[in-house]
Image (cartoon, rainbow, N blue to C red; front, side, top):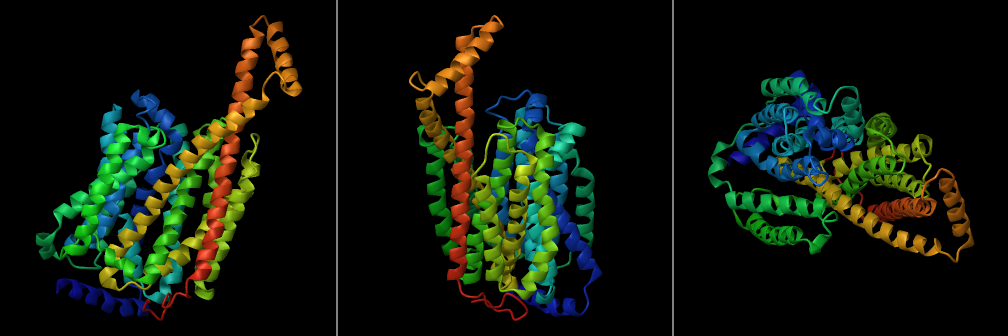
Length: 529
């Protein structure tokens, strides 16, 4: 079979690489890393600059969120599909065409004149960009020998976590210094270089065009509806009051029906669109579970910090970006340390340290107040950055380090999908908790701001007198200001609740690490169990 032949050729190539690293493959790999960085960065690059884009396109507040949502929905469909496409057309064709298409879609997004055009261009950008991300993970674990993993794994782990973390920083700076158009134009030159280098230097595998005849189109359609609807429900659910909204109900029904069809076909057809049998590898299944939860932490906090800084502190996109930069710097400095430690420590020990560091950061944040700024957020952000890097390297090694080369491309797509789905589920849950707890805290605080509370009455009388002295309707303004203060305090308390929940979640992962066996073969010995 062609698949076996390809797997064999990749497997044979590995020992050769160990003796002498082929410079062509190194150039190809680093070009792929840059492409992956651009694709992941673009998820979050617009998050701090949505207000500027909204003004530039004259979009409504309910429409602007789709600049991010359309990208995520399209990307989440492509990521698991990329393994199958790489087998059919080869990694070289898939990656270089994806890089070229992503670059073209970025240029188109910069030319958008209304919100509808922007949503379409962002969806194209997300779909094509999603083809680049898993290819890098697959290449790292097939073209490099196990002895080089401690160098390669931190690089891809750093890019996968650093890109969404510094997205708001880069986006805030570009839109502040130039204009929102540069959020997309910045991809054009690197994109052309990446597309050219990858087309020229990638030679990891050969296409298996005969598989195209067996391609499962029904599987593709059901997967697209399943993942697309799921992402839509998770992204829009909280804003639309979940199942009280007809569109959310329709999305949920479509998700369930499409999921049944997709899973049925994944196990029944000869050449499924996604190879779910990778989960039969125990290490891969555990690695994917940890990756899912890391997605919650990675994307959840990249959402929570700017939300707090924007709503409570009134920061603009550049100030948010500068504050968020601390996490990115901590990750960058921790990456080489994580690489060295992953060669010397049991991966379970490294993951325990990472999860504990992350939980420490969120526990400090649970004591948040309205006047916290850069310096109060400094230590929690360092703990978060260090924790993420210490976790990602062993998780990557556990999940993909024992995969046979023939399964690597499909497994890489699934592994990256778990991180993105973790982010989507995490954001949906976080948003729901924030909304519900804010309402609850506001109701409780309001009970204390009433005529029977002498402190509340003293504050009310002072404020009324101050506004009356300026010839205003003091009583009305004082009531509005007291309500706004209660609302603000309720929001801060709801943030604290979310940070407590995240702390418990990451501490529970330490128990999960203790329950798994020492991963066999994550290193030079090979062979997973």
